[in-house]
Length: 209
Image (cartoon, rainbow, N blue to C red; front, side, top):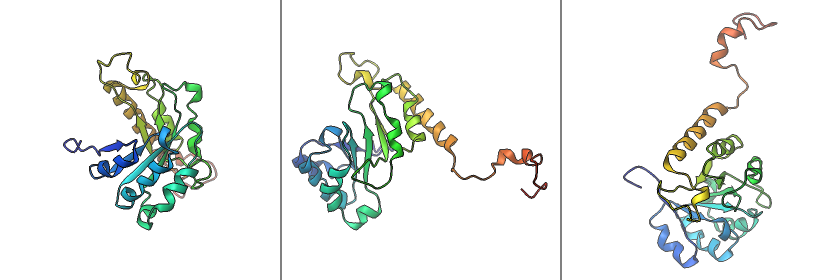
């Protein structure tokens, strides 16, 4: 990962493993099935306070309330101010049917831990869906998680249905970059491409728009 300039992350599933794994990674990921495990959450307090980022997937209707109670309250001021705790909207079905992706939930991004508080999207849509990540970005996601598989992966592999091949993932990333550019800065100001059109706008003096 270091050789190709990728930040290494890792999920752990047992509290006693967190400390050992944390010394080797910059990001620790808590999967949706463990997101309400108080003991595992508490085990992540020391790593997050020592500079690690912790990303938590919230699936199956879970909110960030338990995450805040057992991990958030143990964070030091540096961890809070640097935003080292991130939550992802997740639907824990593999693959997730399109009608259940619920990407609109990403619009709830305020810091209300008793309700939804999402910074990104953990995408378990079918491997052929290359636009779902872009839709999530358009809805407000700043983190996207997607599963990958090698070209020769056996179809009986339990991750097969929602894991993308490298070529599909490249297209997926390309669509995300398109969404980022198309979203722009959100400011309601004239765009450079409108310069010529401004001369024809009714009710505004030329050159003073």
